[in-house]
Amino acid sequence: MVRYTIKRLILAVVTTFIILSLTFILMRLLPFQKPIGTNDAQYSYYMTQVHQGFVVDFAVENKSYGELLWKYIDSMGGRHYFYQTPVMTQYFSWLKNIFTKWEWGTSTYVMQNVSALTIIAKRIPTSMYLNILSVIWSVPLGIFLGIVAALNKNKPVDHIISTSVMVFISVPGFVLITFLIWIFGYKLGWLPTQWAKSTDGDLAKFLSYIIPVFVLSFGSICGYCRFTRAELCEVMESEYLLLARTKGLTKRQSILRHALRNAMVPIVPAILAEFIGILGGSMILENLYGINGIGDLFITALNAKDYNVLFVDMALFTTISLVAGVILDLSYGFIDPRIRMGARK
Image (cartoon, rainbow, N blue to C red; front, side, top):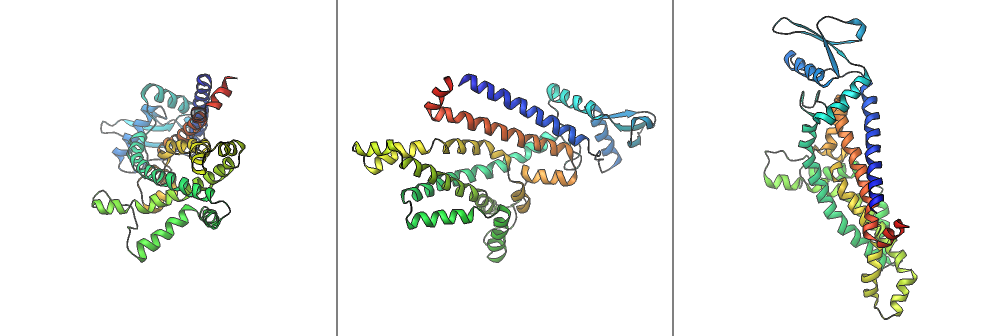
């Protein structure tokens, strides 16, 4: 397991490096997004880009270097002609900034001349709180419904739960949240139609969690229910469970001691992976409900062509996905000792 863990971690690091490198190069091939605002603000931004190695500053115009991004005369009468450096030069400057100073670039539009990491760090807690609440709500409810359906296989209760899951799992999240906002927000007026602001009261903040948490939990509840039912039904039909019954265990004892424990082997890793992925947020949901999370930030940066913020957001999503995959693979060995013993062979 130790050898396998080290191998998976190295592979994840290499994969992350390749994905981020390709993403950075492709994004830098796009047209340079020029900042807006006062001349002083733009000058400060361009000088930051010069410091990071993405832009070069000439005292005279240099048409052979490429397209002129901006020209400026400072208070001392000095002339500045800013040009974009070649893509590969930017790439190596980017690597140097990360490994030596942990700089990932500055924002052009979202918060001009502010570190992209700072902007991401401010948005992460909101997305994390929402997803933690959705996981806490969806996991026990989904597993409970799956157990009920499995224990009543081919009975009316099973048919009702299974049919409802198949219907509701097909409903997209943006359709569900639009429907809930329209019914409970505009028609009934029970819940807020937008995410609460920092100046709102505690009750308004609490109520604003209900719709997004429910929407985030909806798909997970259906998924856990269907997964738990399928695994538990398969385990309950196995020979070793029949043997346990013939040895004198009651149906309840055989289910609690053997069936549920073995059915949880593929389910628990999925739960762990979802906990790891709670930082990912939900782009469409956050954007529709006005939640200041990293999902909404991704769409905002994409529309504004704020490439630095967009890239850091994408880097976060990529890292989360790969970490979740590693945790998912490793968790099988820790949950089921037979997998660990098989790995040694």
